[in-house]
Length: 79
Image 1 (cartoon, helix red, strand yellow):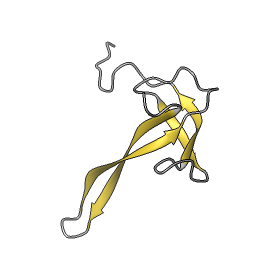
Image 2 (cartoon, rainbow, N blue to C red):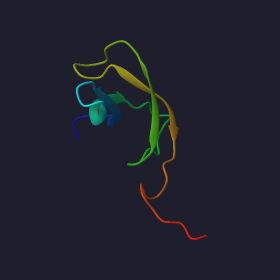
Image 3 (cartoon, one colour):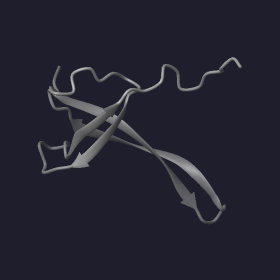
């Protein structure tokens, strides 16, 4: 385990293409410092990050808040 107290998050966003008058999906992977007070962060959770001083070569953000994600990204619900 090389990165202790560091997680990699994926930031999805839409980029507008003027020529085609459409949006395309893009993403950015960011290394984020995870404070010890956030112990139970799992894959699929939504995190709020804030900018801070450079902590290492790639880490420039801190986790501010963790919101538990839903079980499945796409799921069908019964009425």
